[in-house]
Length: 162
View 1 (cartoon, rainbow, N blue to C red):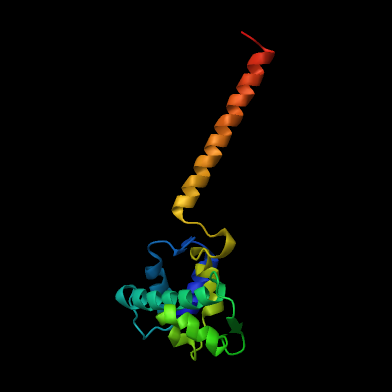
View 2 (cartoon, rainbow, N blue to C red; view 1 turned 120 degrees about the vertical axis):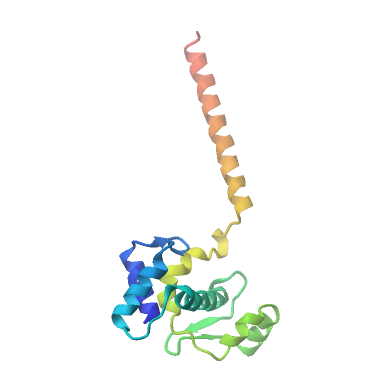
């Protein structure tokens, strides 16, 4: 029910940000869960906060296996909601990613629902950039724009000398 409420809250859009949800969303989830599970009495903090942290962490591990750089060999079994790969692929990956071992034989039924909420938070692949790259790219664009303006001014000055 927690994941279903998270998806509903995301679809409404009131608490959305690129990395998941805005501050205050836990209390909204608490109210939503209270309506569908009135006697459970889960509190935003620490109950929901802890559960969501675990869900997001598990989702990120699975997402990185399936979508990360240089991770070919992994697939997703939609029917079993399970990461699949040859043993040699698993063993190689687990050597450097110990946290992934838990998913070798364990399904993760919330993967597809959580993609809509958290995928923007996980930059991977050819377009992934770190902050230094982004700042450098902005600086290059600024220099190019400045040069273009200077060239335009020089051209205008030759057409209309003062």
